[in-house]
Image (cartoon, rainbow, N blue to C red; front, side):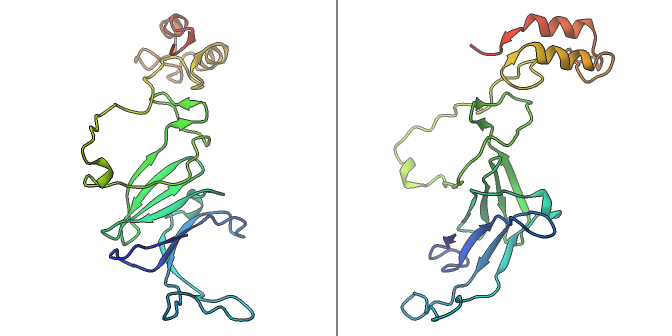
Length: 211
C-alpha cells in the first residue's frame, strides 16, 4: 500500500495492488484506491472491536477479462503527478501505466530472468519477477550533472535456432526443428518452410549463442 503524495491527484489516499488470491470466480488482480478515515491528527481512530473503514474503495484498474491479469505476490503501484498510475505486476515482471479512467497507456515486460536477459524474439515466461516499478521524470534531481547515455536494449540479439530460448543451440532445438519439418514452424531462413536449409542454419550455430 502506498500513500498518494501531497500535490498529486488523490493526495492522502491509499493505493494498493490487490493480488486477488483465492477468489471463487478464479484469481485475478486489480488496483484499488481508497480514502482513509483520518482524524484531525492525521491518524486513525481504531475501534475497540472490529476493523476501521472504509468498507469500499475505487477500482483504479482491472483488466477487461479480469483473470488475464494476475500476480499471486510481490507487485505495487505508484501515482503520477498527472493522476496516472504506474503498476508493477510482480510475477512475470509486467509494468503498466493507466490513466485516470483505467485505460492502459503502455505496457513493458521485464526481459531479465533469473538466468540473465532473454534474446529478442523469445517469449517471456514467469521467471523475470520484479518487486516494484518507479517512473523518474527528466528533471529528477538525481539526474542533474550526470551523463545518461543510451546503452541499447536490455534484450540480447536474436539467436536463430535457439527455439527453447535457453541460450544454447542443442538437441532440444534440433528436435523442435524436425518436429516442424515441412511447415513454417521451424523456418529460420524466411521462406516459410522448414527444410534442409534451416537445418544448416541450426547446425552452423550449434553451441552457446553468446560467449
